[in-house]
Image 1 (tube, rainbow over the protein chains, first blue to last red):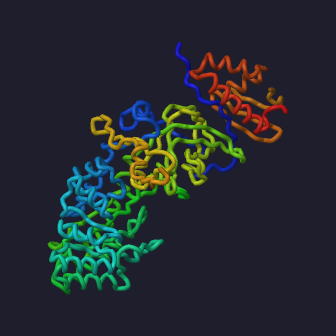
Image 2 (tube, one colour):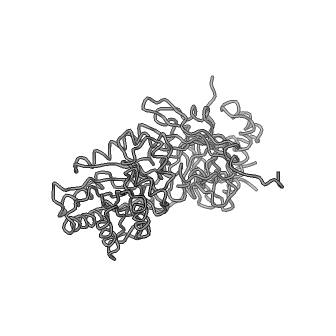
Image 3 (tube, each protein chain N blue to C red):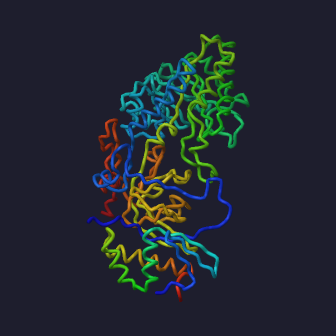
Amino acid sequence: MSKLLFERPAITRLTPGVPSKHGAGTVIAPMPLIDGVKVDDLIDKYGSPLYVFSERTIRKGMEDIKRAFSLRYQKVQMAWSYKTNYLDSICRIFHQEGSWAEVVSGFEYDKAIRNGVKGENIIFNGPGKSIEDLEKAARNGSFIHIDHIDELFMLSDVCQKKNIEARVAVRINMDIGIYPKWDRFGLNYENGEAWDAINRIMMNPKLKLMGLHTHIGTYIMTVDSYRIAATKLADLAVNIARKFDHNISYIDMGGGFASRNTLRGAYLSGEDTTPSFDEYAEAITSALINSQIKPDKLPTLILETGRALIDNAGFIAGSVLANKRLSDGRRATIFDVGVNLLFTAFWYDHKIHPVINHSGLVEETTIFGPLCMNIDVIRPSLMFPAIKRGDRFVITRTGAYNNTQWLQFITMRPNVVLIDMNHNVHLIRRAETMENVSENEVIPEYLA
Amino acid sequence: MIIKGNIALSDNGFVFNPSTGDSFTMNKTGKEVIMLIKEGQDLSQISQSLLEKYDVDSNTLERYLSDFVNDLSVNNLMEE
């Protein structure tokens, strides 16, 4: 007769009082499968911890957002935000789905070219473009989004000297009624700087004004902010048409749509509060359609949505290293995933599921990572089942920013796998080795 | 290793300490361990019976049994 599954014995104090609005109990569902593939099989083959991506979820997200916007507006173009996740295989899925590339550095620009994106389908954002970057992007016909007046002069200078033309847009920041106001990127709408830049561009024969761009912030929960931003950009487009008899080709609303993760400190779950793609789409497209732009001159709407499209498709599977009790009596569990691999733990209360079934008893637990650093906290407090050393878990919605902002700190970064549409598993980034990490170091002769 | 005499234990893992007013809940293994302690078994006897029943090695079991007994003490459920 086979033996029973062992759950470590656990006792938890019941706290009397009024139940919270979430109810009296906490249910943590086990997660034995990711997209139909056994987590145990993944870890047995590829090691722990392990990044896992679901191609099915990525494509479904693209289908949802395209449907939400194209139902309401004729000309919609997605541009994949490289900084959110620039693993080549992930980028290529988005490009297969019709996304252009939205890049913010020369490195990302070159990555997009390597991924087969044509220069004319690259949007180049960011405040740190070099003269070489600007020249390359201009020659390739990419859309250069001017971030500051100095960049405008730099680009103008390059175009004059090299006798080339550049396709440009102006990145515009504005008051859209939310705090904090994002005014460090782009040129300001209210103080007239943006209009000044537009005038300079329109009067420069080497620069072709193709569009207007804004990126109002990140994890924006208020769809009305997008409505205000789209209205202001549409007003600028009308003023440009009136003054210069020039119709811009596109309005780029940037990114910033929230994913369904729960922000740290938020009272309600992100699953309940995050606006749907339909709500964002309704706010933006109605503002454009109801603007003074003539119907036959309505520009293409570009979206640089990153987080909301990839967060849900990413998972980190890992193993419990240890359990301990803290001085105040709380349980603490140490995972083999730290903030080096899960940078977003600083922002989110990530949902964590044990792989195996459990009795349902949960204890207040702090989840630490394995780094020898006080800041390495994955969840400061959550109700979690009695798991033991060696048990496995899955952290969900980890697809955005964790594979671009990850840190090579005291250990190497692990394997990354992709589960394709047919549930086949592909290694898309090998775990780092000591050689990878050390190969660029140079030891002076006297230390050799 | 003795559970305090006034501690009330129910079949479904509910524990009540009338002297402090605290109540607790346990998982299935916790309930089994506390029942065996109440029957007067020592840790090695409890270990043996759990090893026969559950898919667990003796080291892991020893580590979590001692942890659990410590939890019982911390929560004032054991005689000093």
